[in-house]
Image 1 (tube, one colour):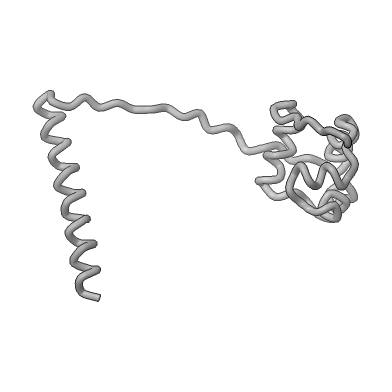
Image 2 (cartoon, rainbow, N blue to C red; image 1 turned 90 degrees about the vertical axis):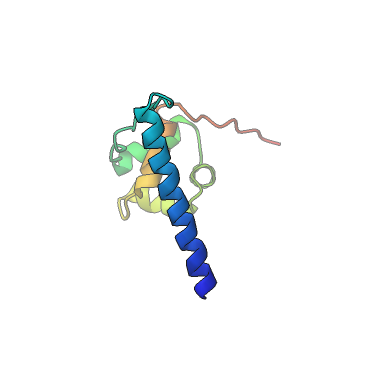
Length: 110
């Protein structure tokens, strides 16, 4: 047990040492820092039951097919459309992506 702690402490010490070395290199002009901006989207809109059904019907998806696309059960789609349950935040984002046409799966019939 002690050897794991020693390894963790050594790793922590080495990380601190490397970070401090980067600070010194930056101060001496040997290192140029860069930053990256990431645009984080606003939270997805809430979809009312009628809006969820409208999205599904405009795409000509059955409840079963829509459920497969969203990776939920057909019963979940039914409960959203009836207003008994509300979609999770992840499901709202998927609904938004489908609603805006960002994801438009090709459905083939055999």
